[in-house]
Image 1 (cartoon, helix red, strand yellow):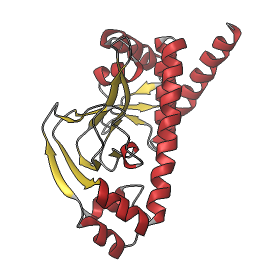
Image 2: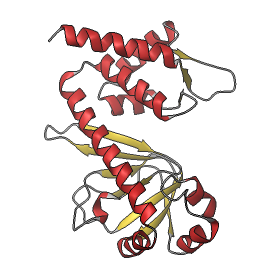
Image 3: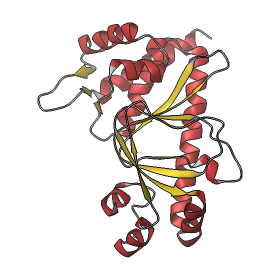
Length: 228
C-alpha cells in the first residue's frame, strides 16, 4: 500500500509518515474480469486507487454508442468527480481483467484533503486534464475520420508515456477511438509499414516512433485545415 501511494502522482509528494497515516484509511477491493465497479448516475460514495489490473472508464452516448474516455492502470485513480458536492457518477467503471483496488470513503478522502492540501491540488489538476481530454475526444468523434483519431491518440499517448510503448489490444484501441476492430487492425498494419509502429525485442506491444507520429499528426492536421 505504501509503495502504491508513492507511485501514485497525487500522493507522491507526501513523506513516508504521511503516506503511512493515509494508508490505514484504505480498504481493499478485489474485482473479477468484467465486473462493474460503479455505474453512471449512481451516487459517488468512494474514491479508488488502482494497485494492479485495468479499469475502463466509459459512458453511452445519446445514440447508444459506448464512448471510452480512458483505460486506467496501476497508480491511476477514479471516482474523484463525485467527491465535490452531491454529484452522481459521470461514467461507468468496469474491470477489464482481475483488478485490485484500494478505496477511500467520501468522508475519509475529504478529511485527507483537508489535512493535505497538496493532494487536493493534484486531484484538481488531473480533473482539469481529464475534462480537457474528454472535450477533445467528443470534438474528434464529431468531426475527425477514424485514422485521424487513431493518430491523435497515439501522439497524445506518446507524450504521456515516457517510453512511447503502446500495450493496448486492437479491441481496446477500437473502443478508445470509436471504430471497428478490423479497421483498427488494418490501420495498425499501415502504421507498421510506415515504421511508425515497431516491434522491438523484449518490448511488450509496439514502440511508437515519436518523431514520425508527430509528423503524421501535423500532416493530417494541415489536410483538415485545408478542407475548411
